[in-house]
Length: 95
Image 1 (tube, rainbow, N blue to C red):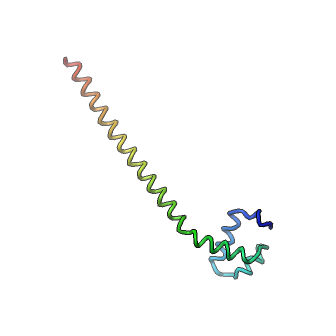
Image 2: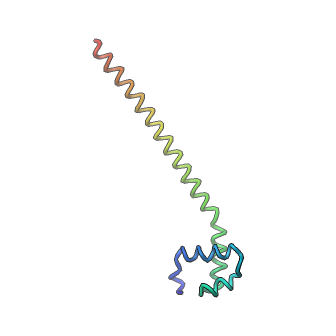
Image 3: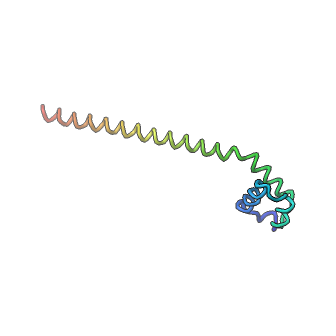
């Protein structure tokens, strides 16, 4: 395989295999027909960036919660305005 043809999925498979530690980097590289230094490089990169996976989820969760709160606030606001409108309609009919 050429260096430019490694897909993210391929790299992830190699890294998962390396993380299992059932085979050496040399064995994985030989089976995958890649340079052993790539196995080590991709594994180190994955481990170093692993925290970002959870940070993104946390940020996404925060945004989702904020969005849901805004929707709830808007529903309450609309409900209050509808009650006011109905009260005003009744009030105007009485006069």
